[in-house]
Amino acid sequence: VPAIIANGPDWYSSIGTELTSGTKVLSLSGKIVRNGLVEVAMGTSLKKVIESIGGGVPENKKIKAIQIGGPMGGIVSAENSDIPIDYETLKSMGVMMGSGGIIVMDQDTCMIDMAKFMMDFIQKGSCGKCIPCREGTRRMYEILENVTIRPKTESRHKTLERFKGLMQLESLAKVIKDTSLCGLGQTAANPVLSTMKWFRDEIGRAHV
Image 1 (cartoon, one colour):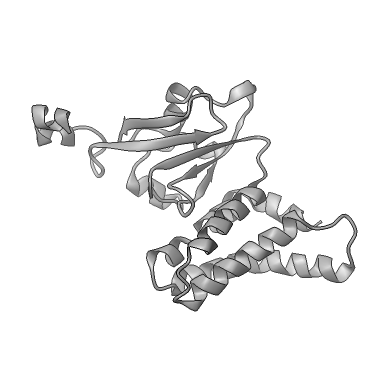
Image 2 (cartoon, helix red, strand yellow):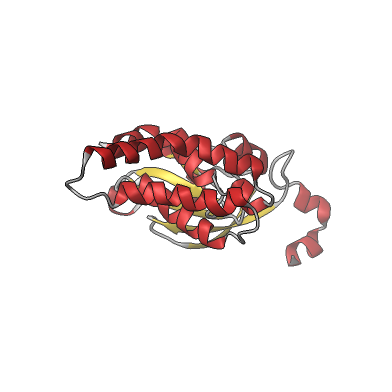
């Protein structure tokens, strides 16, 4: 704010991109050397924020995925780490700026565990007013929970039920997104939809 007062609005508007000017404060956390709050010009690449500012992933491990915008923001794969941070680009990738949170996940991260963690947070935050959000987010969490806590020995029926649950995830997520009343419900499925977009093979192997 002091810099805007000193230099004027035109100076501030000259920073960033043509469609998204100015700067953005981001919360950088996860499997990264330097955590904390950073302020960058709009259009700065995720890769630059993670590697140049955050110091990269510890122990020379590889980036696997990046959570953007808080629990309801969505996830992108490491292959997309060079995308610019602006509202339009993130939206085209199926994620959103949201709260400006960036969580870095390394090669050891289980994407199903990550999606389950996000869904647990979201379903607890539902006000319960509309059925798609109240029941849908709970069901999505239950499906992911059944995958991650399955016993070593189980009946074929249980295995089939778990497989059917995974097959229902995407359609269930789209129904919640399209029919919920408020912004929470309309974005609640983002963690699952984006995980399925970039890590469908990992989810598909989970029922085995």
